[in-house]
Length: 226
Image (tube, rainbow, N blue to C red):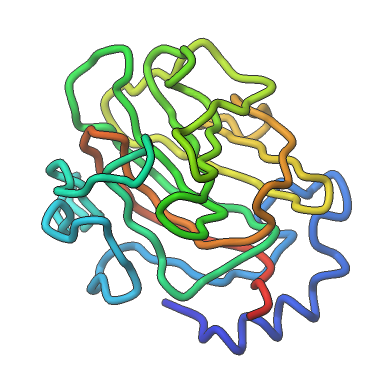
């Protein structure tokens, strides 16, 4: 179910004073729900770099958003090829929750990505969860009119994409500039940084050049003013 944008903006205004105000700031319960999808319907709310690489597919007895092929898309600067974003939900502070399953082969850069602060194809953030961390993998990245740059101040040595679905949470506090990433364990971030380059933007999922499935996508947050 999608909440109409004007109603979401009203909710955000009413609840903004309590948003991200205490120890529960990384919990979705601190912010109003702006968008959710279990992918049981269509994809009219979404925009993709290449719609032909995406579909609704059955997996584990349920419908998922499936990235099943490489997008026929070349980014203006070095950054992920496969991006699916929610079109009409632009946020400042937010908590993104999503379940994700990596369906590609195992190798060092085996990844899924999670996008936010999206301005245009050359300006956005993304989280890259990959098997092994290096300068170009398993980090928080900034794309700012130039090839992506790792900006994580804390991160693990890699992400274990075992079979099955994993719960990912990304929490953003624009006033403090904090970005926190959680993988299965919602008590301890696997990545953290502080950055204020983009203070609002749209949100999405995808991969640099791999495949994967997504489910139970939810955005709690503060709607950005138009």
